Image 1: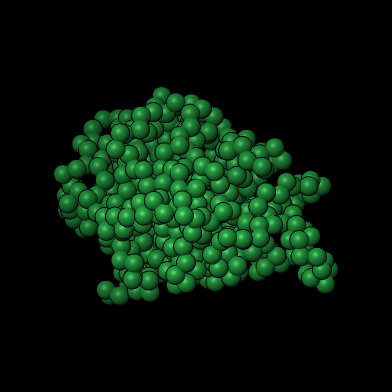
Image 2: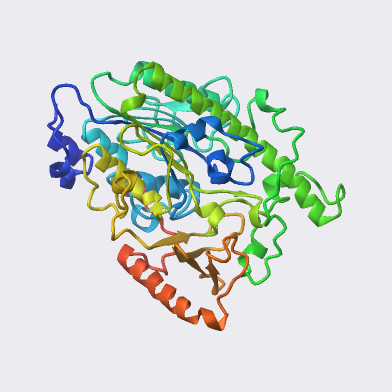
Length: 494
C-alpha cells in the first residue's frame, strides 16, 4: 500500500504534503461537509433573500439553512456558465488557469478539492450533476449524470462503470425511475446512511440538475402556482437604452429559444407576449425549485436522524446566478448582477452565527481554500482563491478584496464575450469583440439601467477601474488576447 506522501504525489499534490493536518488515530472530530449545489438556481428564487418572488414561492427548507447559519449577499461567480464555474470551484483557479473556458473537460491531473480532501483523510463522494466531462478523480464514491442528464427517469454513470477513454458520457449507464431531483436526493440519503465510513469525516457533494432548462418538474408539482399571477421583475421590459449592443443581440431573451411559449400570431403585442412567456417560464422554473427545496428538507432531516447535524457544515449554492426575466432575459453569461450573484448559505452549528448575513465580495474560486482550511488543511499553492473562513467566524480581514475580476468567453445564444471589474460600488465591463464599454454606479443604479461610461463626471472612476482591471489581469495571469479557443482537457496529453 502506498504511503500518504506517495499517494499525494500520485495525485499531483506532492507540494501539498507538508501542509496537511495530522489525523488522529482515534475518533476524528473534524467537521463533515455536505455541499449541496443546484444548477442555475438564482438567489431571488430563495425566499430567504427577500426578493420579488419570496412571498409567492417560499423555500422553507433552504431558508432554514440561512436562519441557522449565514447568508451571503455578494457571493460572485468568475465566469457565469456551468462547466467553467464547476471547474473553478473544484480547482480554486480561474478558467485561464484551470483550462476550462467553456463546456470542455476538466484536466484531472491538476490539484482539486476532492483530491486534497481525500488526501487529508476525508471520505469523498458526489452524486448528481457533475458536468466536468472527464471521469471523476479524488472521489471514493460517485454516481453522476452523463452531461446534462434527463429530468425524468435519468441515467447515471456509476463508479466502476466508467469508460477507459476517460469520458463520462461513454460510461455504462444505469436508468433510475422517477424525477432527477428525487433520485439525486435518494442517492444522497443512501450515501449518508449506508455508504460513508462511520470512523472518518466526509466531504460529500449532492448536486441537482434542476432548475436548469427545460424546467421539467415532478408530476406532483404540476399544479403548483397554476392560479398565481407571479410578480414581474421591474426590468422585464427593459428597453436597453444607453447600454452596449450586447443586450440587443443576445438570443437569451424571454420569448426566444427555450421560452418561446407564445407565438406572435397568438399575441401580436410584443410587450404582452413577453409577459405571457414570462409567466409560463417562471412557473416552470419555480416548480423545479420547489422540488429542490422539498428534497433538501429530506436530506436535512436525515442528518438529524443520524445525529450528524451538529458536526456537519451544510452549504447550499448554485453554479452561478440566473436571469428570472430581469432585463427581459433568462439564462446567465452576462456580468450583470442577476447572473453574477450566486446564492450561498452556510450552516455550521457552534461556529457560524445563526441568522447572520455578509456583504463581502466572495468568489467561487474561494470555496476550495475555505473548505480546506475549515478541515485543518491548507490550499494548494496553485489555487488563486482565498479562504473566507474568518468571515464565517464573523470577522472580515482588513485586507479583504475590494474588487473582483470576471471573464466570459463566447459560446452560444450569441452572447458577446466580455470581461470586467466589479467593486462594492461600481462595475466596468468591456466587450472585447465589439470594443464597447459599460459603466454602472451600483449605489444609485442597482438594476444597471444607466450606462454612464461617457458621462464627463465618470472620467475619474473610469480611469481608476481600468487601472484596477489591468492590475487584476496581471495579478491573475490572464491575457486579454486569450480567447479560450485552446482549452486544456488533459486528453491531449494521451
